[in-house]
Amino acid sequence: MIPIHPVTLDEYSQQTHDSINSHESRPDKPEEACGVFGIYAPKEDVAKLTYFGLYALQHRGQESAGIATFAGDQVHLHKDMGLVSQVFNESNLSQLPGDLAIGHTRYSTTGSSRRVNAQPAVVETRLGSLALSHNGNLVNTVQLREELLKNKCNLVTSTDSEMIAFAIAQEINAGADWLEGSIRAFNRCQGAFSLAIGTPSGLMGVRDPNGIRPLVIGTLGDHPVRYVLASETCGLDIIGAEYLRDVEPGELVWINDEGLASYHWSQKPQRKLCIFEMIYFARPDSIMNSESLYSYRMRLGRQLAEESLIDADIVFGVPDSGVPAAIGFSQASGIPYAEGLIKNRYVGRTFIQPTQAMRESGIRMKLNPLKDVLYGKRVVIVDDSIVRGTTSRKLVKTVRDAGAIEVHMRISSPPVTHPCFYGIDTDTQDQLVAATKSVEEIAKQLEVDTLAYLSWEGMLQATREDTNSFCSACFTGDYPVAIPEQVKRSKLSLEKEKVVV
Image 1 (cartoon, helix red, strand yellow):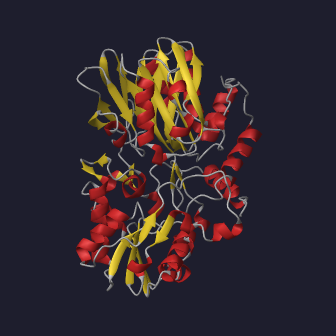
Image 2 (tube, one colour):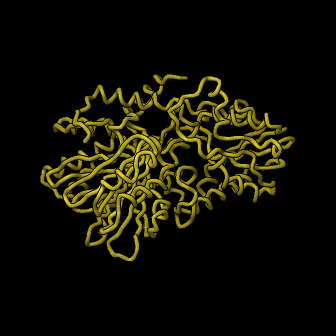
């Protein structure tokens, strides 16, 4: 059991500060918030199925993992810091019985990287326990937190996810049932939230009115009431579940022994899926808009070649996320594709901190150049994004040291000029290199011969969907959910206090 210790507003601010400071060694990429998973499957080993679902969603968060199961009115919970394979084993999975389970794998964007902030969040209500897994970020946390504290809610974490859970509990304790209470609570929340919620009476899957973060539904076997929820279709594939459909923006699906029921709880749903899910976050084998993201990313590369062709000998992608776009660039340009960098796939997060000398050459820990491929060549490096530019500069130096005589960089997304407030960990605007420098100035900083980004129009056209149905605020500053000035100032002040190592 996690001890009940209310978090004061001062502690909340300090824990959020700790969260920012804990990212000092984060990679030069946007980081996803988390992955959620839920399953209702009587007579199945739901804990083990959830484990494998989370394993497939590991790329969405590597700080902590957790699973909660329901056996009648009893909830069983295990969560801890670390990767899915580190948190769970045969022994603790065997202690998670039930017909319903939800799981979570986390990367913290709000709330510090501490065990108490690991999910699922479990709270008690008059109808029994509630367990909640959340992908996204609320933007009205200050207001919601004040409301909850006024009503004597014992908040024990610094996460907005726990606030959603307590908001539901508050409505239920006031007399509402599971569905009515949940819908009332969701209407108190502003921002991005895709949720898997377990209760003694059934499983819920929920998306915010804009559907900023993804959530899909699958069916398991021929049994009519075995359903699965996952952030991506790769979480279904690994356990043999069949993709049924997406949870729609502003929709709540309620799953129990009677099957699946749908409730459209928002009066004004407007799809605004995060475009970065398609460019970078989601696995390339996941399906969105009826095709694999691998196919979309190849089209980005082809469009990139049409917009910024260059004369070169070889083109290669930064493993792994830049590879599909590099293949598309090669196909459209006629420049041969090659592997110029080899990725060490066993390098992940480590608690062993390198020395300064190691840190300066840290790019070699993950990527090693193929010198005989690069020597004497004019090369095109394709990557999906540049945030601060620190890693890209080290990468370019590595390629030049391997003997490349020209280095051209092509980015399969537009310049990132604005921070995200919906569940992606990006820097404040003044720390985003494209917000403060021109493309020519960035090229000089990276020490490349030429640099070009994909156009905003080309990125959206490549989706082959309604271009108004995506959130691209990190490229334009056009936020689909208004960001309170207090939230903007809070992020800026915390980032400015960040310790640099």
